[in-house]
Image (cartoon, rainbow, N blue to C red; front, side, top):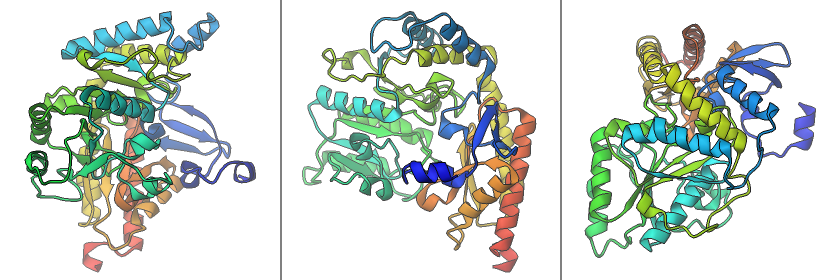
Length: 426
């Protein structure tokens, strides 16, 4: 590790939890220089929903490269972009009755969030944004202002303006009528909080610890936005692209956001790409008012098109639901009995084991570390990183999914025992 420690910045993060040199990956298995292999329950932090080096997508990319297709196009018209736009419209937007336009932003999710905020403020002529406690929307200053983690906010080095945090319906503040609270703020001329241009949310707060907004609450939020002339932005960066089953996580509530942001797995192959979906009447941009050198990642367009076709041809939504049932059953029947202070929650193929009921704040780290020793890559999320987060590729074979879950069970059992967390010993 001397090369990395000597030459790479201290800002590096995941490599501290997974301290190996990785040389190859296929499907849901990573191979290290040491010769050890790891089952992947991390999936590139959600960027690899279709697994590592998916053969269907890779073949399309290789063909495009070998044909000397355009590699960089800014926002010029290209065949790769045209094919993606038409495929995305035919397979995703039209079947769902969505007529949103597509804006290609810079290469990462935070770029799409920045674009959404700028556009919302331009359309509504207001500066404020409502976000939610527990939210994560990115690390550039605009999206960082809507990210609630104090650790990340303090790294910004400047005051973060024009975002007001509202209580999320689950997680930190349970039992509060959060819709009623926002209604009171918006109707009270002494609330001290101005009407925002938009409200942004993740229907499932992934980095926030797998906090899932109830369906009825989502519908009430949509209604609140309509009644108060506020735009609703859904952040689908981590929980979209089929992660929860349907392509969009908001589909389960039957709502239609004014804008939605996508990144991570939209390219299908881990290639940088982000898009902003916006209702046509909101498209008031003037040319180049929001741009970026790499908003035309042609390889990402090719990969994204192939991913959409792969998703349809393999019946991936149904396959995701089948695997989701397996994980839910395993967690409830095999993990929860280990200790009464553990809780689990999730949807689709994103689940969490919450260890915050333990007095030992290091338990989640111990579990994740032990998983790594046993050959499973898994990350943590939530307040104090107390939630062990399962996020395997949607394409993971059942035998690898089962094996990874067994490794997780062994790690939880050992770590709970070593920390004297069994109910009979507490």
